[in-house]
Image (tube, rainbow, N blue to C red; front, side, top):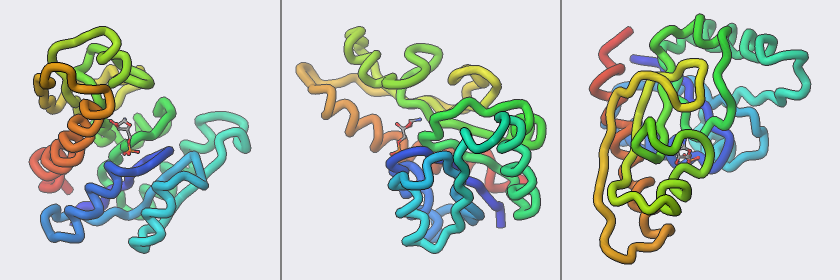
Length: 190
Ligand code: GRF
């Protein structure tokens, strides 16, 4: 069974969506670990509820990104993890992890990249007045949301839809698109 590591820093609703699919038997994978830089985030609570191991670290306790990424890489390799799935992980991935897992790190972003990368993408797009919203799943490289695109899904909002309504639609798309990409692109690889 394919072993996945989820990386999250916050709420973890995408993490939850993936856990739910696995528990339903709809995704042939195992979440070997939740990796987080925020030991008290809600994603950690979710992981504990499902008995998923948590690897948490506090970046400022390490001399450099290389140092904490080396520890993470060592742990993931030992656990036989073959895919890293970022889901609201609020840090740039560095050379150590990119080299240890080439083409095996993916991310989800709540806009149609390359538009509106970085933080608060949905609000940026809403304030800009875009007529089409969407979600992107992409490979991770050293940049901010710049890696090669794997899949996108878009929709046109209804007239006068609020930011909150649009956010809800985007998150609903995220949950099914991420699982679909993992299933179609990665679960058959070993
Ligand atoms: C999602 O909107 C995702 O696209 C972005 O961060 C958010 C994480 O939400 N990268 P959650 O923690 O999965 O609820």
